[in-house]
Amino acid sequence: MAINRLQHARKTALLRAGAGAGAGLALTATFGLASPALADVPEKAPQAARVASAPQTQQANKISVTASQLLQLAKAQVGTSENAYGGGTKFQQWYANSQRALETIRRDGGTRRGYLNAPWCAMFVSWVGEQLGARPQVGWDAWTVAHARWFVANKRWGDAPKPGAVVFFSWSGGKSLSSIRHVGFVVKDNGNGTISTIEGNTGNGRVEERVRSKSDVVGYGYPEYAG
Image (cartoon, rainbow, N blue to C red; front, top):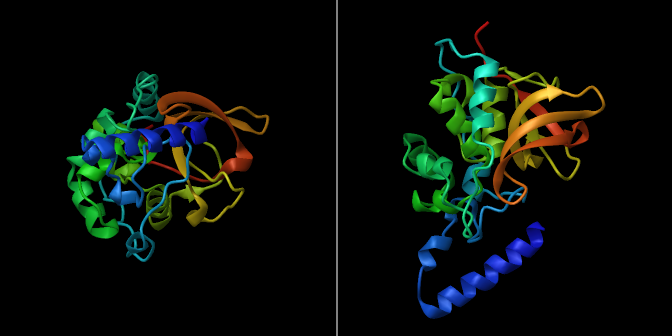
């Protein structure tokens, strides 16, 4: 399904480029390719990001938000969908206009406009944390690998699927941080080798509730919740 969407998007982009209209809408320089933010498709970061310095460490202040409150807000976003160009979500718009975008542009290259159509699963996770005032615990980034490294650097990384944890996936079966391609929130451990999740930029580019195999999980980041 994702391949068909990519082929359709490329044909559309070529036609629009030939007509000289709207070419700027396809800019996704931050992730290296001019393509829609396809759901569950491996994102790419430029060489600058791969040699970047360590992520920022967690701030000292404590969170007053519970895991259930975070999951309630995440669930309320279910059904939010991207447009035909892989953009148009409030998560991308918020990130593109954030202070963090300037920081990750310096790290990865690209422009603010590039984030408007870029893969947005990590932006969704970051947006949820920001809305609850939980940025210091949830982190904020547009690149899943860097987001995972942030949890590791803050010593909040592990292999247990706790409710409210940030879960990082690899579709190749790899278990290294560099193999991570997708991210979401854990709702619960189903006790049968799967977890229930809420994810952005999944399926056909939507926020959805999913059931995932634990075999696809690289690890979990643990925000510090109240209670």
